[in-house]
Image (tube, rainbow, N blue to C red):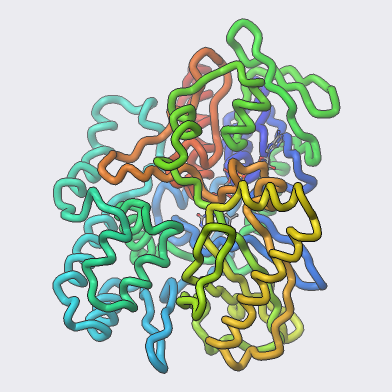
Length: 497
Ligand SMILES: Cc1cc2nc3c(=O)[nH]c(=O)nc-3n(C[C@H](O)[C@H](O)[C@H](O)COP(=O)(O)OP(=O)(O)OC[C@H]3O[C@@H](n4cnc5c(N)ncnc54)[C@H](O)[C@@H]3O)c2cc1C
């Protein structure tokens, strides 16, 4: 054996780290606080129906990228995994029809030009920018700090070129949307990102991934995908301890030597890979004894580093919705208020393409509301559980009315299954401020910046988890797990995978 590794957290990142570490000959144990693994790729039952977290895009599922290699290596996908490939990512009501945000760039250009000929210049500029961003690979081979100078230069080159060629920078999505006269195009662009104050860069990355055919949905969902990863991990000899929270990381003479579990047991190891949220890491597992400039800056200035959060409503509809757009963005007839957040868009997703989610003539429908009201929910629930439930039900009622308005065929057929707030995500995944993605930099002019994956003053501990990357998401969560193992291999003088 090359040594023993403990992975803290059994989400996509922890499972990826676990599989890679086993393949490298390490003995590996995953400790997960929750009773099931999967982390944010959650699935749960309500009233006899399946509810799921709202993941809709999986990058690297059906291409020949380094990321695709990771998904295959960890058992997330294989040649038999059935996918729903999104022809369009979202639709927007436009009179009696819909405007589609097509994945095919030529089709998208035609659609937008037809919708708003007066925006021709802005549309052509947008298409040109998407094409620039489309050429950027997702860096998933190895972390920068393990690259030789020449490798670094080669891997940086496409980004430098894109920076040079791109004319859209230093602005927010809200500022950019103003370039379009068509309100439908403005709404489409604004509704893509979790917050319109975010950088144009995030919008372009997202649109280009979409247009690379990079957005696929495994038909049985993301929880089942993590189940396959779990099976791969176990088949390679890994050990899983579910419902076993880690309380503390033991540091002796500046070296991580083991963990103390919540049940009081102590486990001694050679390396530790925490994949948990950074507040859990610093405040709990490291007992406030360590400081880190990267995360410290993000905790201290939340106005500059948004942590996107959402309220997620799962509904069951006794109707066939297969002829309707699977993802529809609507502008609310009356804005919905979650405390101080004015929600203007509803993103309505239905899963009629998947028999896993739709059984017995019922269609699973999800509605995503972007918001930033973690503190409000926390205060509300602490003060009164009854009131917390009442506010959630009130939101759900308004949503049902809106859905019946845009899809009259669903009228009287919608059953509320579940409302999950940012507090729910914090409770189940211990996610910082209930965020579902990592820190997003609001300084539009600044370069992307990621964490170096280790904490100064602590040897033998390498960070995984989506939080080490800007913006996060399942792809970066998986990459972070692989990178943590590569850093261990490097320290262990082993060849890097
Ligand atoms: C509603 C929703 C929609 C999303 N949509 C998309 C999408 O469309 N595309 C996309 O790419 N991404 C999406 N994401 C984000 C994606 O799910 C995450 O980026 C990814 O799953 C994070 O994986 P992770 O392993 O880094 O963290 P997590 O999944 O959070 O895993 C961390 C694990 O650590 C465990 N843990 C915490 N503390 C301890 C402790 N003390 N001891 C032991 N275990 C502990 C937690 O219980 C958790 O299971 C979405 C997320 C949500 C919630």
